[in-house]
Image (cartoon, rainbow, N blue to C red; front, top):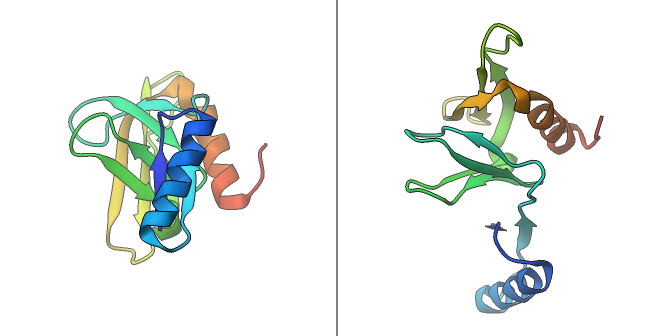
Length: 128
């Protein structure tokens, strides 16, 4: 089970994590979203702040919430990437069952490098 929390400082996050672990009576893997790799995207109808972590991509700003568990993702594809031609691109996460997917649309082209670095890190384990 992965729990994602994006708004707590480090001490409150640790406290939150320990409380959840005690309540569930089993270990959990907790991710804390970072400010730096956050980017705006449109997973449904409106543009919201997407927060990538090591195990998830989340937005908890507007309903319906978006939580993409990267453990369930087979491949992530950046679409419509044409710097200088288009102002935005999309990222599609295809699940391991090769049927379900989650798309985050209309990410500003200026965020491409940030998104690529995050995807490289979570899928290959290296920062370039």
